[in-house]
Image (tube, rainbow, N blue to C red; front, side, top):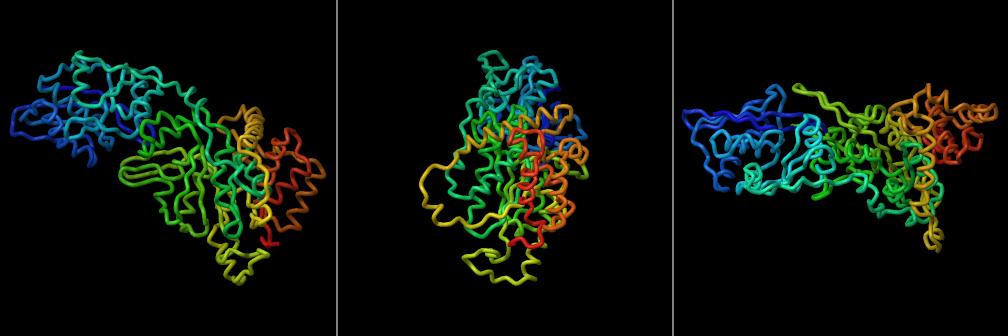
Length: 512
């Protein structure tokens, strides 16, 4: 006999429908799975066998063939356990196949017949809706995540027996629904707050500008200056994620298996801080089967790279494409996957190997050639994609002991959101352009026009301060953001002057 079960599989952060065909015929008992299954899919026969027997069903001693269609697309993961088990029951006459019509089934089986969570529940539910199915049956642990999808009944079960009872009509699984807009509205604020940071008024101002314009930022200063503390508070002043951004971040974290148990939605902007020993595949994604990397896990959030020159040169160079395009494409022999990677890069480094170049309290032990080799670990094309280079000096002890409350992240975020609103209104005709940092040269010419005094100031900065030609557009974008924070349309010389000071690495002498 032949049974057909509707299921789905994850490819990248999207999912596509899969039809699980189970055929039972006479012959020597065997179990074979076809349709380009990866290791976890091939091993499902052992889990299905034990789960059926331990749940009180009969495992047929026949020749069993499982086909996963479309057969020319690789299948990975353990989500096919449940549909294969139901297919075996339907093909052997232990379950009526009619009860499976219009329902997508996914889930991993334990040896006792219990259902365990799978990766990518949100994309799977979206695929079920797109395919026109009325319901999706999945493990109860994935129920909250999938229930944010409207237009399809999301049914959660804890065991194979519960699913079978539901399909037989003995007991019904109750659909569950979460309102994603309500989840975003009730999200708790970030625990890290700028009110905890003493001193560093210039650094706070620079990070406010970076958040307002979506600019990448590099913090340069001696050990203990507070670079890491400042960077970890950057997500707290970013605008709250939109529903679209929250769904994209949730999909990435779900596919990577990093969504918190019982979480329905990623309601806060992600903050990722990989160690400097991370590999190229760890940063941009890869593996077998491919998984999203740190740049995708930081999508719509912040990727923080501490001790930037200590990262491997190859790992840093692979950042160039996602920083420019906002996505990562992994091309393999069997398939090509695209992961979103629109993130803000926040990086920190010392000015020299010992860390005290230009510090008045500690003499630098590094010579000129050593400092130059240290700086050359960062390529020009990578630095070209970082808008703000900020020198962060050590905090005087008086600032550390001074009383009074510093400005909170909430107050700073209010100004950032106001500036972002101006940018969204400005860039409405241009799809995919929502922050000043993403402007192309044509957009810069249109939206960053300068007065005659401003042109003279910028020309003098390039000539006298040793700013590179590549810094020209970066300075204009930063000045545009400063003007937006000031709620004015015209870029004034004062805005340009502040923007110029945020290009520290383009100066001939950083410590000067």
